[in-house]
Image (cartoon, rainbow, N blue to C red; front, side, top):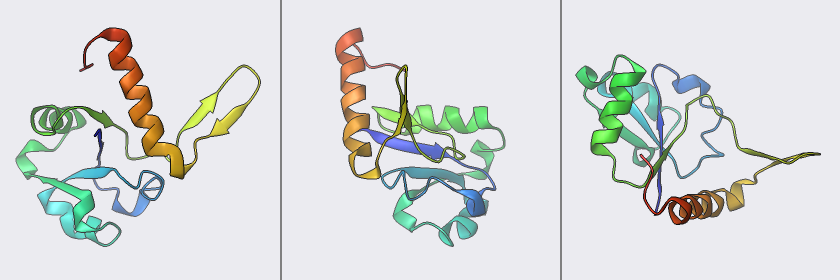
Length: 117
């Protein structure tokens, strides 16, 4: 299984992709948990110590050190995924989203022969 994580900071009211990325867990600092619990269930939160937050680089380093691999990290302002080809664009539906992410990840591993970091 692939973990999907979304680092977030002071954006609890603006999580436009929270329903689309239904399997994702939001990585938030301890001091903001109550704000995020107003819009997300507790099982959708990964709570980190405030001292491990403060910049996106610090938070991403915490994620790299603590979240089991494989994982996909998505910014908290992403609303969804879109596939493009030369002539059209197609929004990836919520129902197939998780299967698509896992399939793409498996293809990358197969092509490279290793997990990407």
